[in-house]
Image (cartoon, rainbow, N blue to C red):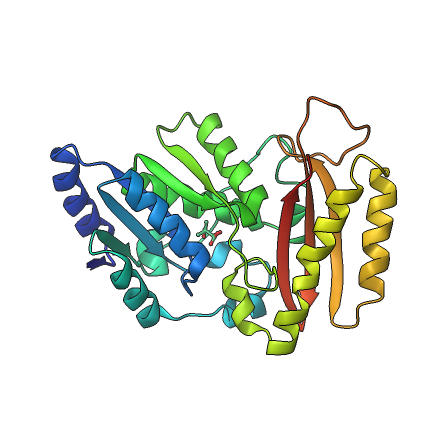
Length: 282
Ligand code: PAF
């Protein structure tokens, strides 16, 4: 397994591979790898000859300094995990200066309104940071396909939109959410939870599942109020938002239309750790 921290050396290595008509898959990550990341890596390995996994904790997508500092960093374990999966993986782990060419700041984006709701509303500048780093990684690696998990569904839709608006030649491949035994969506942030909170956080997915069973019977307003009341009764989990949105536009549902797909989105705090999840409703 090769590990690069310089763009120039990585691109030299990748051009030799592309010269032999080898396809490349890119799995962007911020490290602290878990089963969710590995499912993306495995899918990428099935569909490409070579897979680049980037490991970079991107400072420009964090709206809180504290959250950036506490983000888990487990580089050596990440390398060992990837090595156990395949030798056909190339790791790209640049420094901030290297990937940002010395100027660590976000570009400003417009994503047709996808960025102003939910995560965009509660985490100022988050999607400008995501758009900037994903744009830099895509242009450095120039993969055939890039893989993103549906746990960050809003991020996935925004990256699809960026690729479409900029007419970029990369295929964006969505990958389903992996879950812990109690139903909690896998996330690097779960590492920061106590065992009690980690078990209790299964309640998030359980509530989404019940919301799904109510969808089509009760109104969206009723369901939202019901979800809120469930979290009001929970002492460990604090609800930040629950929204039912059109999957394409991410606009909150007003009147249900039969030809549209809807998804429930949720953000919850447990022991100061922010957890997000979502579930297709129809
Ligand atoms: O989903 C993530 O881990 C990050 O937002 C990403 C896509 C790697 C960009 O930093």
